[in-house]
Image (cartoon, rainbow, N blue to C red; front, side, top):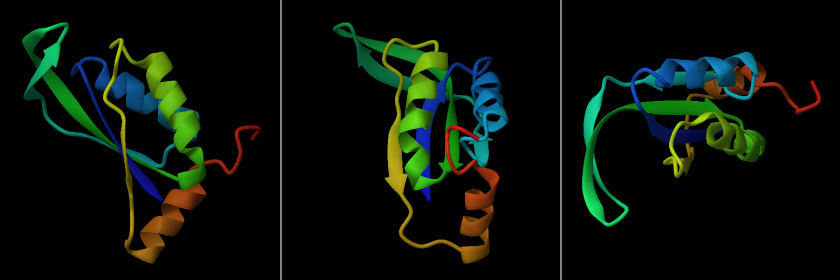
Length: 106
């Protein structure tokens, strides 16, 4: 199991999550309330309102999920951070496994 973090403009976050869910490459996505993000972009400090997406998926689906985020995301360089899960409640991990399709050909 892996957790992927990405940020997106609040209007885009639900569309991104729903698409990944409909494609069955993720089991769950929590969209956290908008936050103020400050970061360097093109040599300047930028301030934006963003939602944080906390995405749960299977380890073997990381590359397809990352590729889809890049395709669907409105940013040129979206944040995509993958966090390995060392320990989790086994029934939850099983649910994540069962909720994501096993292969991209399914």
